[in-house]
Length: 123
Image (cartoon, rainbow, N blue to C red):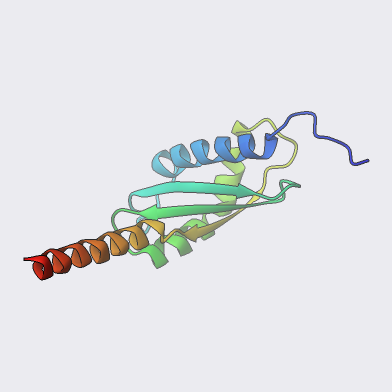
C-alpha cells in the first residue's frame, strides 16, 4: 500500500507560497529593465519539489524579453526563495508566459461581434 503524505495538499500549499513570495521578490528585488509589470498567475510544482513552472503575464513590455530575463534571474530568485521557504528542497524555477488573458480577451471580442451581428440580423 502506498505511503500517504503527512500533510494533504502540501504541493499546492508550497506552490501557493512560492507564488506569493515570487510576486514580492520580482517587484522589489529584481532590477532588470526588461522585466516590466509582471503578474505571477500560477505555479506548478513537481511532486519531488525539484522543478516549478511559473506562469506569468505582463502588463507593460515585451513578453518574450521578459521571459528571457526572468529565466536568467531564476537562480537569483531561487536563492531568495531558499531564505524565505522552510522546506528541504527549493525547486528550480522555469518561467513561461501565460497567454490565458490574451485568449480570454480574444474570445470576448468574438462573442461581442457575434452578438452584435445577431442583433443586426434580428432588426
